[in-house]
Image 1 (tube, one colour):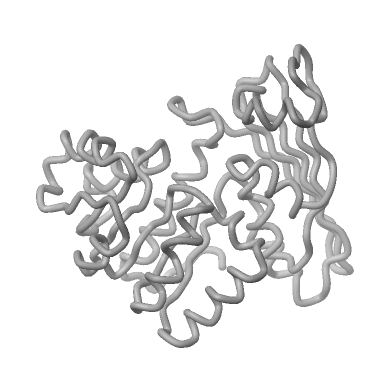
Image 2: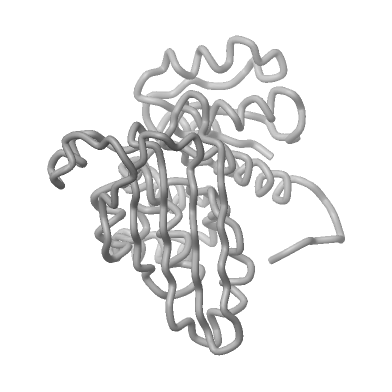
Length: 270
């Protein structure tokens, strides 16, 4: 499979390591970032991928003729790039899934997939239990709650200051409210909100906690339906280069990529 990646940050570095080791059998045809030197740094030690195009815009990525593009950059990248890729028949794996809580963008993405037959893939990311939530959704889910605990350094300090938290010395609830509002205020921290929304058909109630003592990114999920009540707690190690990103997030993307590129008659989970 011919693959491109948008965004050469922490998530891309994990995916690239897997590709360069040969864990995932793909041809990496393009890397795109507003800072091309980040792409060059990632490719420097990757002896298996020597013909990868380094791009600053989506047209360059399209010229490389990828079959699948992994978005690992930002919600803005989703808005600017994903509809164009889908319109050209290119499948996309979206990691900044919070962007899809924008109803207009989501409708545009759906229409693009219908007209081109291209697909959008969303990995489970930094949480667990998405299979179960999807299975319960047709029965109707009554309640979805999500509590996120991260080190204060994982949050944008300007946003915390605007919310009245200029200095945090102990565990502090920085936000409580609708998942849509959480995604708008903390776009780099709450992609799991959108994943839960799309899986359940219900916008979660979200609590965000900033804690200067934490060394893990913690997600607590509660889901209630007529068939089942689910409680999940996931304690993730943050990526060493970016505390906003749980290490599990890129690992889930790698596993999804493996599923898309291997031929097997045995599938585990949905």
